Image (tube, one colour):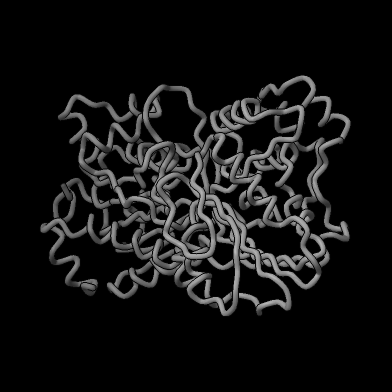
Length: 444
């Protein structure tokens, strides 16, 4: 790692972009299941050990568990297509995300079968991470898979927050909202969770399949009505009558269940901050649970960066501003995009070529939106370089076309599946006091 002085001496040699990408990689490493699973494994039981799970990190979590477990075990976990890893005793099934498919439904039935008929001497270890809401799919009748897919698509397009979306999902599923834990009764259930949600709320990680749910069918209906999302008439009646209520905290079947957060967005941000400080630069974590419209969040962050660069407030440059959370995108266009590139476009448009401000935003699972593109890089010359290619940033933003925009500039960040997921990551580097000419030149 370069120290701060060396970094600034070599800005003309295109060091800022790799520095920022390196911070992103450090954040991802902090949530690697190989690091965060072993310290939290429970003691082996008298009876059987069954491993179940769902999420983009669940396969690698399962392999890490196998490598450090003393005794026999078996089980089934479901992960996103392309996120599987070889295991010896735990079956890995791949399925679709973010819209569920038949493979996810079949995997969920296998998981239900694995926890049937357990005794109080048995132990269930549930490996949960982001993406599990789509991968665990078992709609409550009369809702079917087609209906569940439609609800997921509408929720994803609506601009609803993750807690709102998961409130609905918990009340139309046979396995979410504590129901999977209830199926394990009377066995002990230990959930190891990698958080991908603002506030690290366990009931929102994969819609809380093994966590009691204080929300209600009425709350789910309120979300549907708020965003104008229609559901089949019989499903709406089911919600209105409270027939699909989730498992509540006072349910006796939850008495022998515990859940542990083994990796969080804050841990990832702290790892990046440590790396910044090792380079002799100040790092400031603005928050690990920032929500709202992605482009509007970008505009707000642009205002903070502008104040730092022009006024030295609330922090003096050079410094790196770090943040995490999960923004939303209300889709109005037909472009290719995701939350993080939408954020960067909003940032770029608001800064309008301002010197000395650089940034990276990406999803720590390696997938921003529907494509396996983690995120992108932004610099002072982003707007002008795009204009030179005949691309207007504001038009790309209005069309939700962030991936195409940054692809044209060769500024996409592609990590491949990271096999973990601690939500979105953002870093803004203000290198010096604002002048009319970028200090050290723009990074290409």
